[in-house]
Length: 122
Image (cartoon, rainbow, N blue to C red; front, top):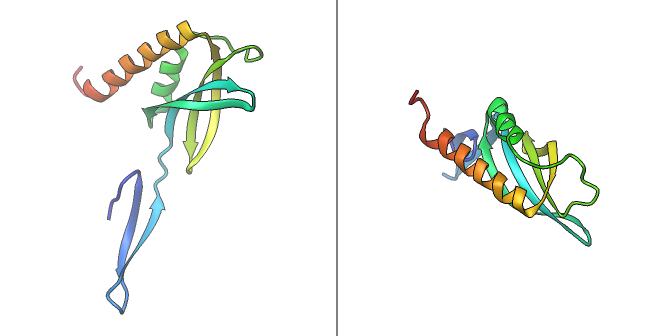
């Protein structure tokens, strides 16, 4: 049985006729770009772009983004994150201005459009 969100499992019927589904997460890591803003309590994430399961592609997209690795005085950040066995792992982080965030969003949307709509059309 193949389910949603990368889960697969087996279905068993009990003596009482109740179906029990055992799910296990497949070994597929997913890459995201998170957008965060600085608050009094620290950084708060408010946006998340899913980049898919390909590390090379996700890294190539993140390398196109404008920003600085200096996070000391920034109000906005963009973070490349990989989900490994359901747990988030921070790979890279950029500080950015509002203008850079707008530019970066345009790049992410354009590249995501290509990934989703131009697969295998070379």
